[in-house]
Length: 399
Ligand SMILES: Cc1ncc(COP(=O)(O)O)c(C=O)c1O
Image (cartoon, rainbow, N blue to C red):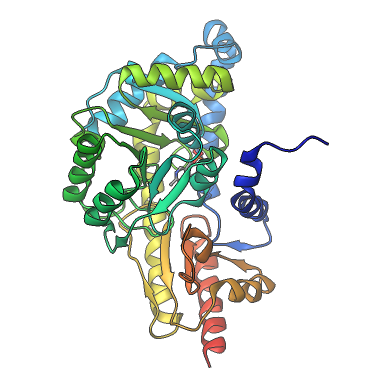
């Protein structure tokens, strides 16, 4: 057989890891704190059922839903994004600044197609969202981690690494970070936008959790501080609407949107028309506000229960984040406990979580006692049972 392309070798480790992650996510017999899935109860099945029946019964909208459509994406969906999601976040944009993509991750893919040549450097967080690193590996980029503290990326280190590595891009999840749940302060967001402009670096602001906030004040986006067009926003409908719809959106300057669109034409022509029509109608018919409140109430309660149970059952010396939103709590067990080894034991009791070590990309000997817990997906009684069981397991192994 002919040799595989270089990118296959380059993405081998992360690709293997991602296979395992997706494989375990849909097993109904496991109490899963591991994947990034929303709660089944948070998926608006009844609303979508009624919209779908009406839409498909209507000649024009029904055909639009089943026909080829524009690569930009449906006009009324882009309009809903501009008025209901971007304007409240302080982002001035019109529909020509918005491209509909297939899953939030497609923005990273298209942006790499437009900007990244083999060997280009992308600065990332420590730890970083590994699915994106898998994409960066596919494009044969070098991902270089930057220092993070309790409020995310440390700007002094980012600036030092910009000078040292001359990166093309800086990738960040500024709000309710995956995997740590941390949120970058407004001051640092402003500085990051400035660094992008000063050093001519693309800031890739991946913000799929921004609108899922349970407490605290909303923060301005990095994009809202961008005066030169260096910041590109990636967002997703996976967490607030439906991950199965595979819908997301990119926000950028118009000339860059056109290039991203060219890359998208060469990739998949356009995102699913049917899913876009359903999502657009979900907004146009006014379902979003009530649904948003419903899921935030559900997830707030689950977050609080998980925090309470971690406090009660995890061994003394455990440290953990207290996110104001999103899906994840990041846990640092006392030294000496290895979260990868403990996961094998936990899975024997049908409980899973995500061991943190592999998410420290390009760093040796860090994170062996860390884990990410998704509090959004499991039912309240399963959170109580699952965290108590994990707590007992960890305490036992600590002896
Ligand atoms: C940080 C981050 N970015 C992007 C995504 C993209 O999600 P999707 O491609 O499912 O829309 C996710 C999903 O978990 C995420 O956590």
